[in-house]
Image (cartoon, rainbow, N blue to C red):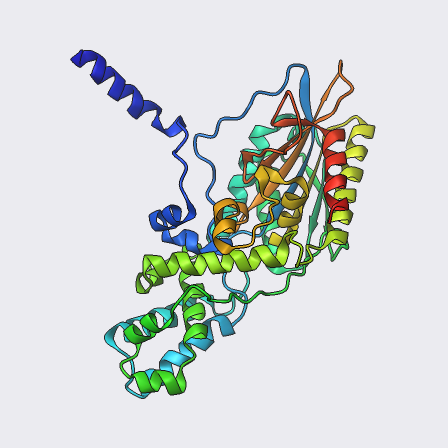
Length: 409
């Protein structure tokens, strides 16, 4: 019996990475890793021990379309650093900072110095993210990348998207020096590079606890500080640190409950603005144009009888459009509360920095049916349509499903 128990324990230790983790809610996940509270600024984590469903018998990959978000980057504007920095500097000059407030100012000074001249550029972490994605994509679909002669590459004009594109292309070229790239850097109606900033309404966060820890005078806070604005500014800096090569930790100034509450409000704000709800426009026309481009590129690949690849680099809105249109993993939902959205739609899972969606098409010499598999952040994703080969789906059924989804909007 003792030997049996020992063997059972040893087996569980050896196999634990491949076992499915128990389901957790967003609060538990954020408590376990406060950086998840960064939401859309969460750093991409490559899948570990990922097991992929075998390709149906007789089918081979013939085309791949990648839609990738930029990797880890510095914050976009100088004001992202200077506004909180100047607020804290004025308070220090007035003698109104606590010891913690002075520590925070020193760290904000360091972050501002690191970012100076690099606003919006991807960091070394962002470069490595995209190199890793390209490397795994190459080896996962070697039949495509070893036979394709020219890869079509599209990027929005933003610098961080172009840098992400360059990182992946250089990695693919290192793996197959014969590859050529047809590069298009322009604003496209089907692949918008513009995304308007959103403001998070802190309905669940009380910023005054933090203010009391940074400033030693409540009258000064009331007369000179905008608590909600400073809270968000410092939270943004704290969230972005994981993209940098440094050992600072601004999340220590927030409680776990504040981190979760901020993420929940921010998550709900993004959901309402960029997804298909009755009250908010999801960009239906843009989604239709994007799907038309996907269909055209796929058909072009099928007609030429040669493996092909198209790589597109844009922002999170592009990914959200595709996720919504395909209803990947049930993400196309209509929920009235931030807590219900937090249960099913989590920004740090859907579109972290470096997020990517891969459409992989498969053909068979003996079966005219074309199959497609979707990888969301390099993990097999589900589409809610009947399939005896899921996560491989009949491409024609997927096309019809998307058109039906768009018609309901």
